[in-house]
Length: 142
Image (cartoon, rainbow, N blue to C red; front, top):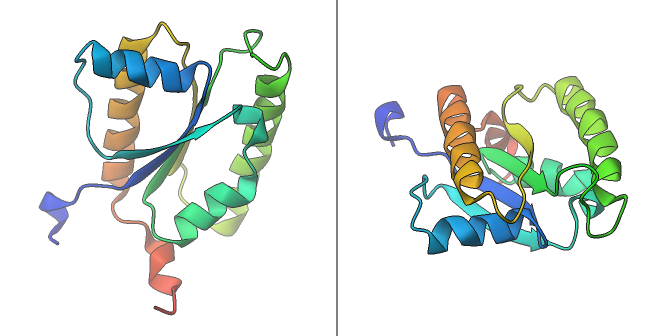
């Protein structure tokens, strides 16, 4: 595949209560956004194990989006505060591993923000597209 035809594969971990509902609202409202994301619905953004993000990148995903409820609005009260702490740790770990900044994105999208969800997906897709294909997959044995 040539560089100009390159379309990134982006894995999105979306909180069931807010971000997934925001994605659903974007769909039912027919708000256009790039079709590059594959969604995994999780109960809470605070429950995402950082190893899931690293494994996705190792397995060839070009970018990862983690999105949850706005801080203070978590269905599980403190889940997004835990997520915010994990995000800072993950960014440091990815930098240490040599993964380019911009491969992993974090956002807060509520259930009523379908337009914001579409804007976040567009922004993430453009940022990952600028980085080009994920070079971690070059190290796979397959």
